[in-house]
Length: 275
Picture 1: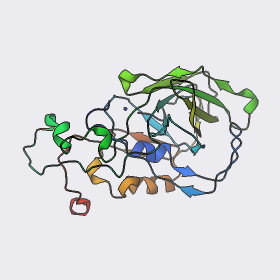
Picture 2: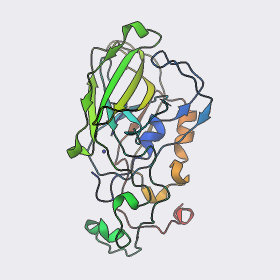
Picture 3: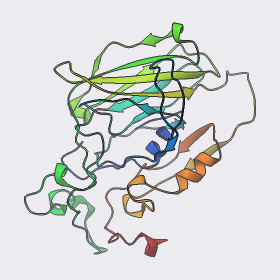
């Protein structure tokens, strides 16, 4: 069961969500897109964003990305608050397919009295903008469309209209899918197009609804709370712990705290010293 994210200032970074939302690229033939990809493993993008609260339990999803042009889904997709009959899909359109990993380094401080309210341009080199910074991932205008169907039942596909993303919410859109079947895996595709109508990126994935109210069976889940951008131990791929979580093949991921703390003093990049 899954989920959530303004720009122009250093913002929230999504680590664990995308590790779960975008875990495994595997050989498969998706009924909605009929494409194959070779097996590989990809950890999350870790973009710089601003904070939009969103409560969640995450559903594991296998995502496949197709050839595309702008706008992109640089943050992947998040599917959350899933029940036995509904779920929510969160997307954000971006100018780039990946964060700006080659961008300028942030100006940090080891001053324990550092006022976190003074974030922003103080952390940029002179003359730089957020898009110039390492991890920067700016939003883009456009619209999205979501298609879904029960697994192996493409003739039962449902689809939304084209829905514009909201520039006032950092170019995001959140959609609730309803009237779903209990304890059923669904295949899902999200598509993007630019404000001028040009076709953009599409992603395919899947999610599984909860058991019915009177049903019961054993299941395994993983739980996490609170993580920091400065304590990533796998570079641009995020945190190693999510690899181990995926090895457990959990039914869902519950994130009980802040997805990430972006308003912390810089650790000078010395993650080993912190662990």
